[in-house]
Amino acid sequence: MCRNTFVAMLMILIIGAHLAGCGGDSAKPGESVKIGLVADTGGISDRSFNATAWKGVQDAQRDLGILGAYLESQIPADYEQNTKRFLDQNYELIITVGFPQADATKAAAEANPDRKFAIVDYSYDPVLPNVLGMIFKSDEAAFLAGYLAAGMSTTGKVGTFGGRQIPPVTIFMVGLEKGIQYYNRLKGTNVEFIGWKTDPAASACGAGRFTDTFVSIEKGRLFASQLMDDGADIVVPLAGTTGLGAAAVIKERAKMMIGVDSDQYISTPDYKEIYLTSILKNTDKVCYDVIKTVVDTTFKGGAYMGTLKNDGVGLAPYNDFETRIPAALKSEIEQLKRDIIGGTVATGWSDCLE
Image (cartoon, rainbow, N blue to C red; front, side, top):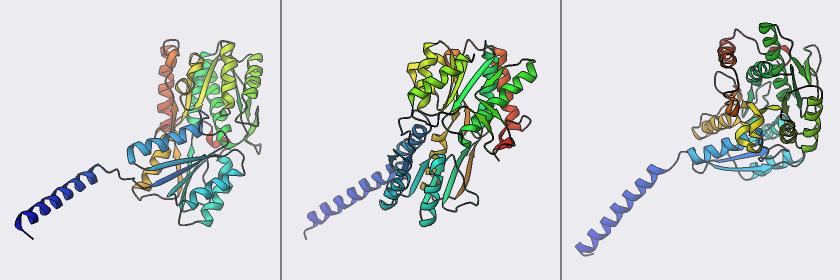
């Protein structure tokens, strides 16, 4: 081989190695890590907890470079099949969304102990070593929303309804009720809470109004109308997509609404003028954090509790109501948040949900 040819080949190898090194520097840590999300029956377009969970996966795709995919469940029988599809395709982490998927997730995790799972709104006792339960003290944020609603209601009546009588729904109701009761004690008022009454002695925690669906626009309109007919001027639907029907009729009747799960001022802008605030369940943040543990190889089974302290739950901005809410009321809510975090104000969780 002549000297010139040798030098030329050497230069090509050096340049190639340099370029390969540059490419490695720009690689993201989660490249080739596959994350699958099994949505509940509301689907990822529910503008609620399914959508928020999927946003967490999308954020991880952007920041960490993981490969994310979702499967939507039309009926409960789809839970098992969708999880199996992700297992068959060797996804590193399977996230199942919603309390109703607890049994299917447990079965899949026990049958596949070497695979990683996470589930929104449920945790297992005893702990499954390959499953992380993502649960939320939504009562903490709901307590603040109840206090706010009591202070803003002109009729002295706040109403709620839920999709199903399950803990991830009733925990909001308990918190709202406690927040209203706390306001009444401090102010000497008698604001009523329609649609739920806590009974710690009852097997289902209490009694209230439930649509038995998270996807019926018609039932959302019906239940919200009934609450307003009963005098409520602020309504808090806890029923996923069903809440969109409530929002439509609340707007027609010029009343107020408190959203849930995501900031509905942003997610459902057609109704933004009615949103006093939203009770945030920051599923996107928690899902993102769990995915990061898979990328970092620090994933562990157990439970992650979202709280006011770690920003797992919270209140959305007041948006169009910012100037309509008295400054004193906003200040009281900020102090209440500090008191809840500090443990000096109880929000209701221990009454019937532990």
